[in-house]
Amino acid sequence: MSRREEILAEMGLAPVWRLRNKPQDEAPPGWIELKQVVPGCTSCGLHKTRTQTVFGVGDENADWMLIGEAPGAEEDRLGEPFVGQAGKLLDNMLAAIGLKRGENVYIANVLKCRPPGNRNPEPDEVAKCTPFLKAQIQLIRPKVIIAMGRFAAQTLLASDASIASLRGKVHRYEGVPLIVTYHPAYLLRTLADKAKAWEDLVFAKKTMATL
Image 1: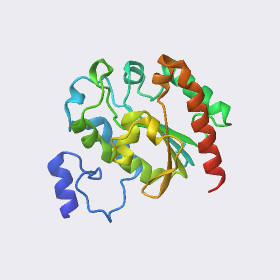
Image 2 (image 1 turned 60 degrees about the vertical axis):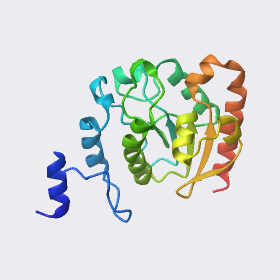
Image 3 (image 1 turned 45 degrees about the horizontal axis):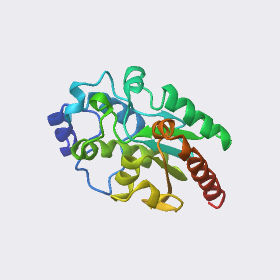
Image 4 (image 1 turned 180 degrees about the vertical axis):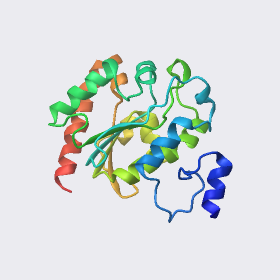
């Protein structure tokens, strides 16, 4: 048995690829392995209260990757990110710039499990779940990333800056252009900022056109 297999066996994940503490030059886990390991993750306390994990959905070869914060109640129930009213708004936003869920678009969250009561993610939860998101990004290799919401933006950019200060700029996540905008759930509560989110999407489309 190889050292890799020994480690996986110790974690109870064999033959699934080990996601944490891997050397930087190792390839990310394949989709099959990743989809096996995420539902069984018990690295933080959220596994005790979830109904199911919310892995992500869409085109696994997409140019566009949208990343939110954490599943809500409906996402936890259905196992898909961005459903309910926030999901409808997101679909409308995508349609406005000629995109459609599942077609050249992949949608995921920083956290794969719902925080109880839809509270904000805690630092330890973000740290434990981020390797899964990083693996998804490495597998998809999107041309542009849209970070939706403060926790998504701050996690990907390793920053504590506000959404307002991060908007309107092309950031980079491991070389991939990254645009920051508001989370659809926030826009449902703050209608005045819908126009700003529209500006962000137009900016993202213009950025994509230059790649």
